[in-house]
Each structure stands twice: as structure tokens, then as C-alpha cells.
Length: 527
Image 1: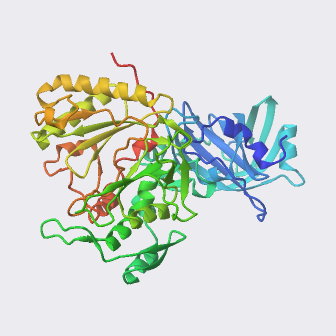
Image 2: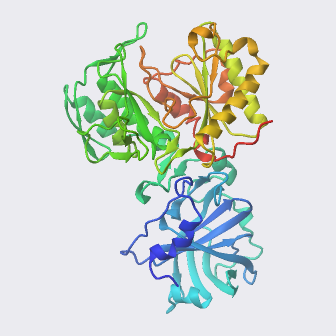
Image 3: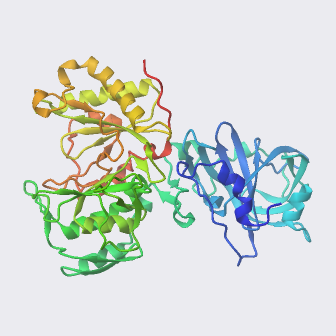
């Protein structure tokens, strides 16, 4: 048997593309604890099964049990020994993206501690093909026996003891011992997302507002600073300046938004937006003197940037082009960008390990001077219906200015050119349904005030504004994700939500965009 946790996890790593699958890649825990832990996860992938995992020498030794464990003595359950999993899996409850290895929904059906039979060494017992394990869980208790029949085929049974129960069916106990939820409930509204391309201690990303709050004490510390100072936030010391400077003029009778306000918003929204930015180069639209002035694009990370910021060197950059990009892999990095005058945040649609392979297909509904809001909504609905007909998950986002954008999560594989061609073909089909609303002219002056269905943003280095990013306009509007059915709301407008209102919306509605993180789809062939 492999002797080290890293060697034991090699099969697990080989079966996963950790740049795509939000699961923990694993860094084995070491020492200190006498108690061994176990977890049983009810996992709906291609087929429903229960994953029984026992902590052995720093990893989770695992069996897939299709019918689940039982407390009924003498009943043999088929169990299939699968690759060892990292200890970070012990609390995993959520959704693995469709199309990935193990894709589906998972709940922590039971968990607790376990111990081998007296005098038994677990690793040697597993190698020999018979393990006696005493489980101390919330549902499972007593002596369980794992017996290998051939290769990776095992049987799992419960001994006749004080915990044995006749006719005990795990399907009659379907709820998670952590959240009390069923698989259906977790699938419909997952709490967490795993990102295995991040270090194990940061692989679990929360998707719910109540789990995404910045430390209130750290936020209050910002308000105690005068016009500048050092702000300790998210584990970093950030030098902040000009805190009372107005960056966004007020809209109507609304108060202007200062740099202090922007930094506070950034701290509060950073954990929510982080999954949309990690491992992606970031383009900043900078307005050092505020939204009422002329801004400029900053792609190159400046030499004075602190060493702790993650960065990526583009190996394909030509002389004179930006080479070193900021990569926002932690909340404090986004705060640095906002403090640096970055009022808009634009992440690439590809990741740094495969910059030529996008993970989103983008549709930008760009209104013309004669395009009414009703016209734009009609075009968005046509795209929604077309994508639904194709069986694709997609999500809409208000631009914060005048438009609507549609994001389609895709599995990495197609090039930017083929993705762009696919989006163009789809949008031209939509445009044929409403030709009176659409122009395909490149120059705005030639469009006669009609809308453009812009597919050209599907190109390496081109970006659309990130979800929840501010926009440089009065009142500090944000690019707000919406539910598709909100297109029917007569109060909806592209700049409806601001840095002062979007957090309350998140607290009540959750993040309507998170499904783009949970799906990796193949674009179907279009006729």
C-alpha cells in the first residue's frame, strides 16, 4: 500500500481536473488526535449511493455503498473500495458541478468517530481484506465489518450487538446530520462550493450571505480611521488613504459615496464575489479622482504592489503589452484594488492555467439610443427561451448602466474563437425573430439607434464587468445578477441596485448567479 497521504491521494487527484472541479485537492492532516473520524455522505451522482469514509493515517479511506449501510445484522451490502479522499472531505456538503467526476449533490448523512477492533491496525487490516470498525455516530453505532471478496469489491455488514436493529433502512433517515436538509434541498439551494484549485484551508467557499459576512469588528475599524491609516482586514495590513474623498456623486437627493464607503462595501461583498474572480487575471477600470472624471484601464500590476498579492505572468504577451496581472484569490486583494482606485472589476473568462480556454460564453445586450428598456427585456427573454430550449443553464445580470448580460457556464475545451462563433450563431437566430430591434453594424453611428447583440467579448483578454462590481456613475450602481423571472418586474432597471442596497438584497434573495459556478456544460451544435 502507498505509505504517505500524498501517495494515497494520487488516484483521487488523477480523476479530477482541479482547475475545474470545486472539490478539495487535499493536504493531509497530521497528528495530534487520538480519535479517528468517519463520515457517510449520501451522494447523488450518476446513481444514488452512500460514500462511507474512515480516517486512516491522514486520509479518508472510502467505499461506495449503493444501498447504504444498515443496522440490521446479517444483511450484506455491496461496497466498492474507491480512491482515498483528503480529510477536507469530512464536512463536504454541497454540489459538485455537472459534467465533472462525481458531479451531483452531497449531504453529510452521518458523521462521528470510530475505532478499530482491539489490537487491529486499520491500514494492515484493509490491506489484508477485513476490517472491524466500531462506529460512534448519530445514526450509525456499533460494530461494522468490511470484507473484501475480490479486487475492489467488498461487503459491508453490521454485527449483532446492542445497536443492531431489525429491518433498518437508511432511506428512511434521509436528512443531513449537519444541516437537517435533504439532498433535494441542498441541490436546490447549496450553502457551499469547493474550489480545489485553492489551498485546502481556503477550498470551501460559502454561497450564502449569512456565511459571507466580513468580521464586523474589522469593518468598524475602518470607520475609526481618520483620513488614512493601516487597516487590518482579512488577515492583511492594508494602507488606506483619502478615506473621505468622494468617488461617486450622489444621485438625486442621495448622499455621495466616499472611498471609505467603497472600501466598506468591498469588504462586505468580497467573499461573495471571490468565486467569480479566483484564478483569473483581473483588469481594473481605475478612476483615482472619482467616477465623475475620465478613467483608464490598468492591467499591468504595478511594481509597488505588495508582495502578498497573487499575480500571473502572461507568457504570450507581446512587447509593450501588459504581462503581470493581479489575481484576486483572497478578499484582501480586492480591497487593495479598490484602494488603488479600481472602481470597476473585470475578470477574464479563462483561468491562469489555461488562459486560452474560456469557462463562460458571454452575451452582451448593448442597447442603442432608440432601444427602450422593454425592447431590451424582450431580447433577454428571447435568449433565455433559446437557451432553455437547448437545455443550457444561463444567468442574467444587469450591467449597472443600460444593458443586460447573459453568462453561460461551459466546460473548458472550446477555444475562444469557437465559443465566439457559437454565441454569434445563437444571437443571430434570436435577432432574426426581432429584426426591428437589432443591428449588426460594428460602428454605433451606423446602427440607427438599434441594439447590438455583442458576441465579440468572447475573446482572450476581453472582459465583461464582474458580478457585484460597482460602475462609475452617480449613486454607485452595481452590476447585479438577477433571477430570470425578475424580467417581469415592472420596477426593474439596469441601474436599480447600488453599493448601498445590494447587500440587503443578497441577505434576502441570496446570490442568483451562483448556478454559473455549479455547472460545466458542453455547448450543443446549432443548426
